[in-house]
Length: 118
Image (cartoon, rainbow, N blue to C red; front, side, top):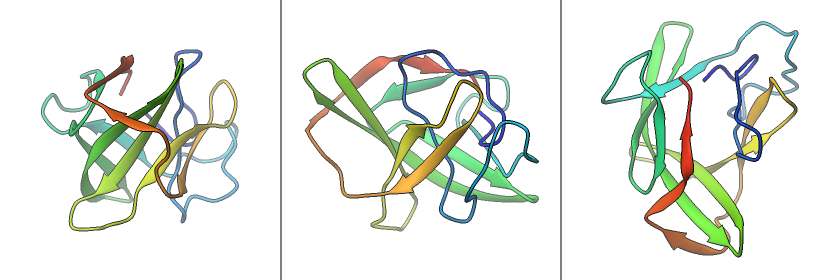
């Protein structure tokens, strides 16, 4: 999943880290999220504790997903390994996403609404 331009399933949340500010679909890609277990081409399962890496400029940050639900609304967060910070994956249009540092909300669940493409 690219934070600048991404093929994104409707209805799912997604995002870009704090240092990837003001990214739009026509901007240069600032990073890529990928499955830590399946690699570049694997789907990213939206489930609690799913290992997901964030790649940017040849560097990688390991992390995990956390899934919360409020009624029919799911919120998916990415947490860098060794950090207490969690970034909600926020939709910023059809082909653009952003990570937003924010406290978690709602009830933690084991499984979310599906998966995202890399």
